[in-house]
Image 1 (cartoon, rainbow, N blue to C red):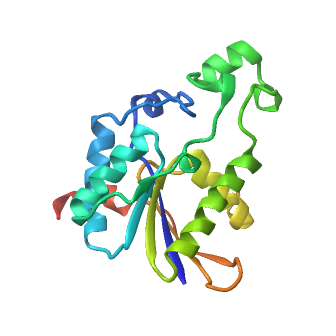
Image 2 (cartoon, rainbow, N blue to C red):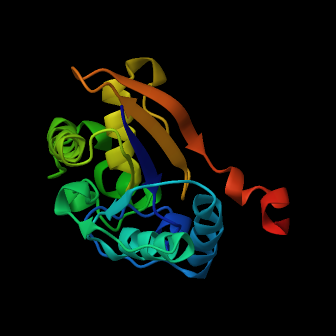
Length: 198
C-alpha cells in the first residue's frame, strides 16, 4: 500500500482575520511557524520516504520546517497542490461578503475554481505519487480547501469539515485499484498542551 500524509499549512494573519486566501501568497505568521515546529518534532519520530508541497509560501515554509526536523529534504513543489482559487472572494472576510453580495453570496458565480477541478488535479498528483513511490509513505503539505474537498470526495460520509492548521490526515491506497482508507483525520495532537513539554 502507498500511504499518504496530508498536512494543512500553519496559520497565517489572513487565517486569523477570517480572510479567504486562495491563490494569494500569504506567508506564515509567527504562530504558524510555531505550529510547524511542533509538527516537525512530531514527524521526526515517524518514518516518511518523501515530502512534497504546494508551491505557495505558507505551505512551502511549513514543509521546510518539517523536513528540517526529519533530517531530510523537500522532494518537490507542485502547483496542483496549491489552494483552490476563490476569484472575487479572495481577501474578503465573511462581513465583507455579506456587505457586497448579501446572504446568498455562496450561490453566486464570483470566479471561484470549481471544486471538482480541484479534486481532479489533486487526484492526478496522487496517482503520479502512487506510481513513483509504490508501497512508500509520502507527506504532502497543502491547503484547507484542497484537502477538505479531496477528503469529502473520497469519504462522502465525512462531509466537508473545516480542517485545523497543521492537521495531519493519513490515507492508504491499495496497490490494485483506487480504494482509499482513512487512518487519521484532522489530527493536531502536536498542538495540545502536553505536546509542548516533550
